[in-house]
Image (cartoon, rainbow, N blue to C red):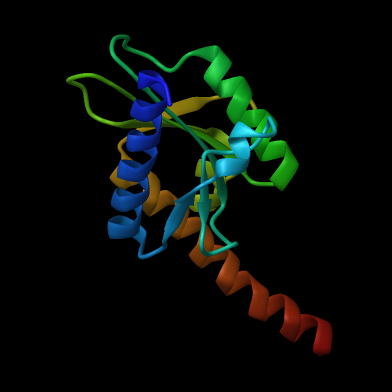
Length: 149
């Protein structure tokens, strides 16, 4: 395993551990990403987790790269989830890039449909994911009740 691949694997394990702490959901590294393209880097134990995640750890830089965004969008299209890029540069905190449609669902607003993207902390990302999951869980019983009545 190359040094950069080892660094990426260590970062994925770190993110999985922190997300478990923040969400209570276990994540495992998606090893299919090495055999077949267009897979996210982490797989949640809970299939209701609303994001497909790309994890990137680099020595230097300051912002999420467009190529990483494209990877996240491609993987998310396959699963019907929201894309997220979790990235970190040496001596900087972990950041997560998400888009307005995820924020709109989390906070029950209408998206502007302008391609707005936001970088948040990993802890805030976990909060947004849990909010989406909670809203979806609340919406399901109503839909079942309405269909029955």
